[in-house]
Image 1 (cartoon, rainbow, N blue to C red):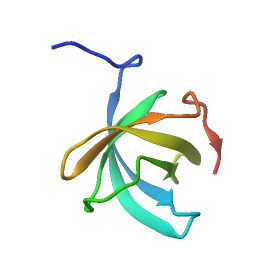
Image 2 (cartoon, rainbow, N blue to C red):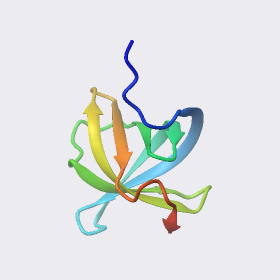
Image 3 (cartoon, rainbow, N blue to C red):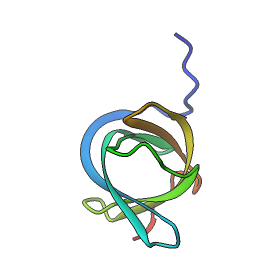
Length: 88
């Protein structure tokens, strides 16, 4: 198996919030794995835009995300803010 990720992802089980549509739409998600450069999110919806913000309340972190891959209930994202936490 070829590994395309720049950073090793670590398994996690954190709650997150997907925010888009000028902050009018907020969807709960579960963060299944996380690295400084991206994450795997478990979601209950079939539609997500190609870019959105991800808030991780327990860490006080917020990332701008770009979708890298999708399955019916999971989404792999790359952080557009180079992995640096921004104030929530």
